Image (tube, protein in one colour):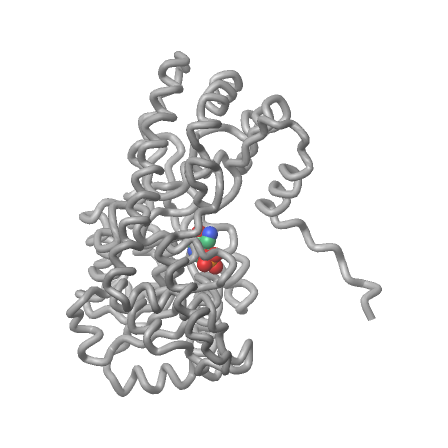
Length: 396
Ligand code: PMP
């Protein structure tokens, strides 16, 4: 049966982790990951999460099945985080949400649904994009193309190229847009640019699929949702995949949500019934633990406040680390100007390092980064930043 099965290529980032783990140099640093580490170099367990977990254990609740679309209180809270308190879309019953297995699970349910709905359509992702976007939509049966996004010459956005690329897409093309903190570049459009992007999406009758995996890591919880709310204000029907993996530091609990904005309450009911079929035939229903913890935090005012504070601390630390990195590189008299790192947002930075420089960082210094030059700024801390700055200065 399995004779002819070919060995699949290794996931590039997970492969990098394996290499890192087997590296015996004590000063090694892994900047290849997509995870937030605190200043001690550990994945934090947020206090708000811990308190919700204690409550849950003390309640000794039974572990029955959740509904197919997950916990209602979780879904409602996820919607409010995206669309805002007092959202007209929510009030009019035009938003529906299904708890999903992380942001990835949300993308996959959405992709399966769209494939059934729009079998003739293609999908367009940014160039570059999170490496799983292409694979995931292809696996769902789509042909995946790219629209221009990053300009290596400026280390910024190729806005004209992006807009022209979007305008050239045929109607009903599914466009995957990173609503904040673009992975892998860290480069986001300005709000004014987003207004033009949203207009192009609307005029071109494109199908927006907003992916928001880092809400709260850019400017703030509300600010980072502004793109979602902009699209909603233009009466665009859309899909939104959101993730609490990073914002709750609950990577392994698989906490995400798929939210759809429809044209009417009646449409919402029909759409939800189809989504439930997709979920039912994939994994039946989502797990209880992570969803209950997130829901408890979001629906308990004190815990919500504590979580928002802890999230702000993560965001502020990342920003501080960006500033320190740039200053430390300047202090080492590197020829390149790294100020662009300060304008990037979220956990990642396209550092501008070439594949050879990344290779030298790994071989000569035990500093691991993705060959595209992507580094996870959130993996830098006071114990390793000088070492990393020295290493980068040496390979430049
Ligand atoms: N979308 C983007 C842009 C991401 O960067 C990630 C995670 N790195 C995801 C989706 C998936 O998130 P999750 O880990 O919650 O599945």
